[in-house]
Length: 112
Image 1: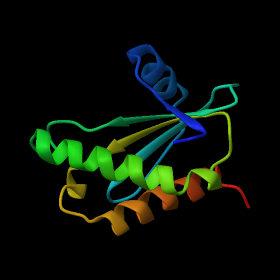
Image 2: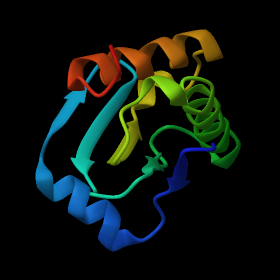
Image 3: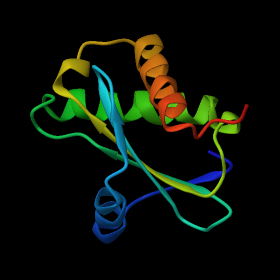
Image 4: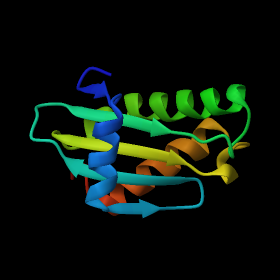
């Protein structure tokens, strides 16, 4: 991810959740907040309801890879938190990528 960093601190996640600007689809929930930086920060949350650690890490890898490949389409200066829903545990990369970009379009954070 050349234009992005990871969102790691709990306080950063809480700041994004506090903004309460979220959109959802069948597989994911996306929260977005402006961060006034020159980079995007991506955070991924995947609870134990989704599955065991193997499944949760697979979901995280799919989201991170999908974001990495579409990174140039996103606006700069955002904190993005993606929450994985339990219905996503059996989907493939193409569906995950489509779900992520669908939410980005709903938030209007993609470049025209």
